[in-house]
Length: 315
Image 1: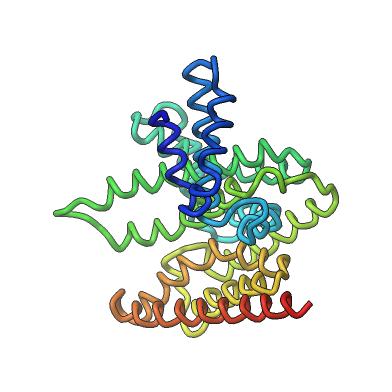
Image 2: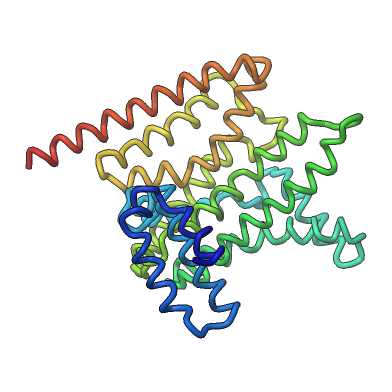
């Protein structure tokens, strides 16, 4: 057994590997017989990718995979609603305009960051258009692109603001929370099972529009991720908890409301936690509440899922 095959099989759950490992190895050997290194590597990556999907519950038959597939058009819409638009006093628009004015004459490091800024302004629009027209393969590629562009900006921010002696960790955390929606939204859309993504015409277009409206609403409610508009009172908690509660509908197999919560969550979770952190006066004061809330939601999800299984057995 080759190293590539052993590595790929190691990603599968132990029980599945024990029951089906020999069969998978045989199919892999038949498929790659006489194939070149590139073709063999591609087959190994495909095999490893499906094993990883099984590990994290994102196959086409798993609840997580089905939920992501339903949420995909909404995710594409929320990324459009997240965009910095003129006429709303959005400070992020200044970064986009500055990157556009700099053109190709900026130093190399600034040029890469500027391209990432411009990419995050343009690629979500292309992504929404791809979903609306049923071009799901292109949409998954563009979703990966959105996540990578956000990662590039986050990397530059880490270099710029996380210096040991003169670092501005507060501003880095703020900027990171503004990039999390792109990072998570793009990654979740790219992770949706390809076999479940098929063009549904008007339904997909309506879901993209609904996602864009929801994304625009929560972005405005959060002051467009501007530190001068940090939320207070109950707003951060509300924007954090409501999407989480909607996701719990998935335990009852009600995927549409759960998909809406999942699509909005990347836009609200990070900045809401940042606002709560500022309001309570530090991360350590916030940590117990976060842990308690997470545990409560986990127990609620298990209880709902258990009730669903009991009803299925009765039927």
